[in-house]
Amino acid sequence: MQTHAYGAHAGDKPLESMRISRRAPGAHDVQIDIAYCGICHSDLHQVRSEWAGTQYPCVPGHEIVGRVSAVGAHVKGFRPGDLVGVGCMVDSCKECEDCHAGLENYCDGMVGTYNGPSADEPGWTLGGYSQHIVVHERYVLRVRHPEAQLAAVAPLLCAGITTYSPLRHWKAGPGRKVGVVGIGGLGHMGIKIAHAMGAHVVAFTTSESKRAAAKELGAHEVVVSRHPEEMAAHLKSFDMVLDTVAAPHDLDALLVLLKRDGTLVLVGAPAAPHPSPQVFDLIMKRRALAGSMIGGIPETQEMLDFCAEHGIVADIELIRADQINASYERMLRGDVKYRFVIDSATLAAT
Ligand code: NAP
Ligand code: ZN
Image (tube, rainbow, N blue to C red; front, side):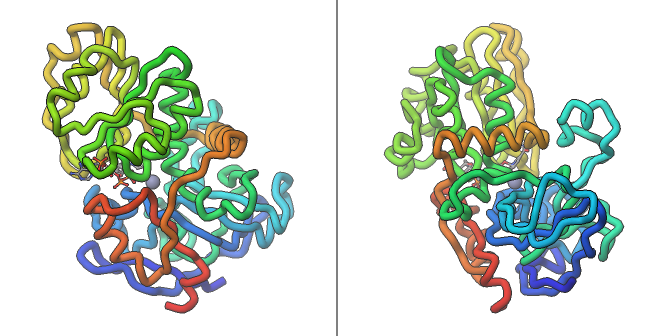
């Protein structure tokens, strides 16, 4: 099937309208009419080849929601008409320890929703800035939110799970003090989810203008990290700090906020490395520095159900396909509250 899409032919070129083909659904495949797709900062890193290894044409997009339009003969879990989502991966080896544990995100054979190896044309996966996608049923999630919220559900498929998974793993909950650094797509979801888990949530932002908004998102306290006295007030007090910042920055300023056995978890994936942390900031108080990547399929379903139960969706700005390039520039300036979502119906007009 041919479908309208939006992608780039080179890292230094803007995204443009293109036609791509999708395979006919195989026995275990689900074919989806995409309704909306969120714009993640990773899309920008990848489409501009900031992480190297991008193949072109590159069609980004891994915050996909829509409706099932057809299923293969062996698909049991989904039927045409179902509301579904697809996140950051569309395949994995299905046999390794990580896959057996439902942590397909850590499988060495994990296939990203875009720029991953594929038997389909053109030889790598093409993502959700398109009108249709065909995905193995194992990597399709069920959406239980009301349909009216569908556009705002899209960002949960990456920003939601990337914050939910480490918050669960490091036990955010009642009696725990959790910091969320960077109030962008990931960070604003982190604040909402940590609040719903019952943690005491402190938001860290470089933007004075987000101070009031962070409280509305659910932060109990807000620190503008450019003000040293505000940072100093929280020294040695956190169980966990979740760092979503998309650019290199000083990690020591965050490590010293942790109390004994606290953990700084990096989920932001800047193109250039952070300046190395001071060893003494780690060994004093037995602090840990960790990373986390999206989440497994069972945990992604758990996150979607948790968010549906708690009435959590992303705060979004819905855009047309021809606004994608301008949205990238606005995202780089931090000028988005807090996630752009593409109305996929507008792809046909491009
Ligand atoms: P985003 O919407 O652009 O948010 C990033 C936030 O970081 C900004 O809103 C800003 O918040 C803060 N920031 C501070 N200084 C910055 C600077 N110099 N440049 C850019 N941002 C700065 O991005 P996102 O979509 O949330 O993604 C954040 C990062 O996570 C990206 O690197 C992305 O690739 C990565 N990511 C990782 C995973 C994973 O699995 N680990 C998954 C998805 C995304 P304030 O204004 O509040 O300071
Ligand atoms: Zn993402």
